[in-house]
Figure 1 (tube, rainbow, N blue to C red):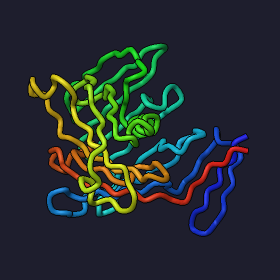
Figure 2: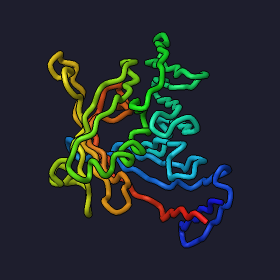
Figure 3: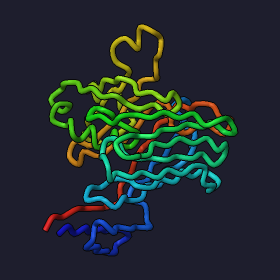
Length: 247
């Protein structure tokens, strides 16, 4: 039996059935600011998924005027690292999804009023989709903590393709915006992608060494700005006091 104890706002909420977990208060809040000038852009409110691990199953993106500008749903029932996901930008109606159908993944991307583009994928152990990157990092924790690199194929919705990436520990100062004892990771395309010019902006992620939780993201946001253009952001994450006990 799994008992999840959630301590929030000074109240103890005990939920004895993890499969039926439903918490209305967010367990993670991310604050996104411009990487160029530090101007506030939006907040992310993460709500727990019905899993025995602490993972986000629903995310709402909120602008400074309290508008909900985007929503995301994530389902880890088939895979922690390649979950089913659907995200919609409510401003432009740009959306992407990855859905399981039998032993395949049906993926799609639609920019505003343009035609839907889709692709069928065969899942593999090295495929990482969207928020599945977080449990993937934890699965490689000992390798990364020891200073060695790890690799994966990360799915890029706007390209309808997966990209080979390398995840490399770098000096803590590269993640200077994050506080405390952290593991700073550089994520970038690997191998020939740099040669052929298909270059995605490198990302920097900071993980707390003790909790192994993501505390900072720096790079291109998965949300465009109000004009539909990519934006480079720094996101700092704060966590509610959530603990999992196995009885």
